[in-house]
Length: 132
Image 1 (cartoon, one colour):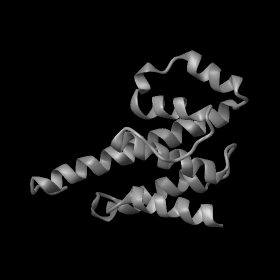
Image 2 (spheres, helix red, strand yellow):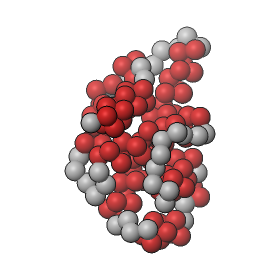
Image 3 (tube, helix red, strand yellow):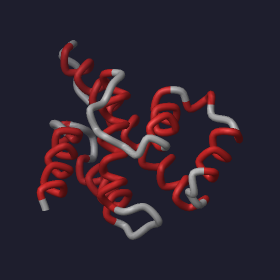
Image 4 (cartoon, one colour):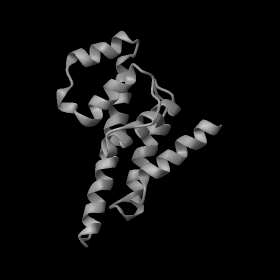
């Protein structure tokens, strides 16, 4: 129960003031769809991956503890997706992750990176007095 509360708190922090973003309801539905839909990975793990990706994309580091096998893969998807190779995906398979689970890791990591970049972009627009 405590971990779920902490995950929700992190996700709320992740979403920040997304109510100021264009289409906040669609953003919430997207995040909910990725985190709350049944899948190979548990919802808690997907929430941790999202939080980790948001923090890494935003600051370059994260205090979210992921399974050690996941951290380098999530970091690469989040910060250097162009460098992903078949070797990365085979490595994940070697740790026992199915293709569906790897897809969920990639999708969740990319969403976290995108949310972090959206937040930075909206803050920059607000800083110069523009409107979105």
